[in-house]
Image (cartoon, rainbow, N blue to C red):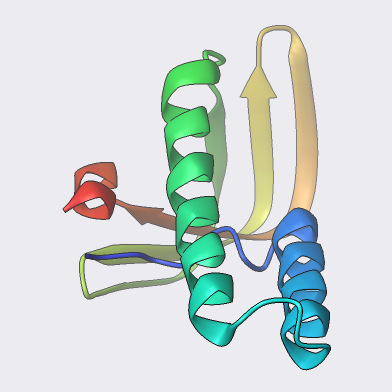
Length: 106
């Protein structure tokens, strides 16, 4: 089964990881169960983004770096401009990680 660990660096992902580490350290959970929880977290986040997010966003900026490795694209943009509906936001530097969601359910 493929998993990309894409969401584990988000705030909620780091909090979940810290909590699971504490539970494994105190003997409440076994390490195998903690890993299964993290894998399920990745799948749930991917599914939620696929089914619940409907807003389209356009992004323009200077492409600083890009790479493709193991079916995962990574883009680093500088001076990015995010536009959606009537809102826009300038961001100095942004990292975008993209992969084929079909690979998550294999």
